[in-house]
Image (cartoon, rainbow, N blue to C red; front, top):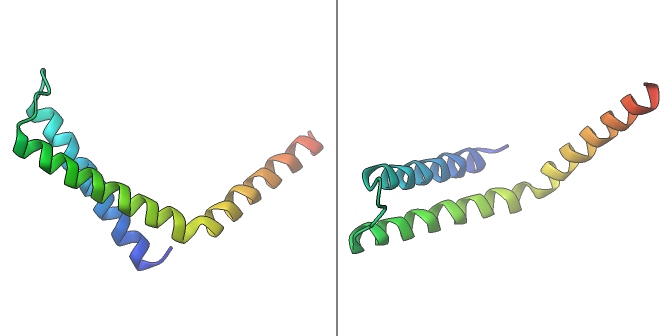
Length: 80
């Protein structure tokens, strides 16, 4: 993974932490104010955009890793 992926991952995680904090602060009724809803919208957008970019930019690597794991498991099944 490259530096952009690491930075996007951090940004996505931080956005999700901000979202979790909104929920914690509004327990038990989760009745968000207009301002809090706007913050929620922006954090969700940020997390979604970063996760999408991470996935799209690394799709080939992620698929190759999945394929490699599948082959390893298939090899173990044939031996066993």
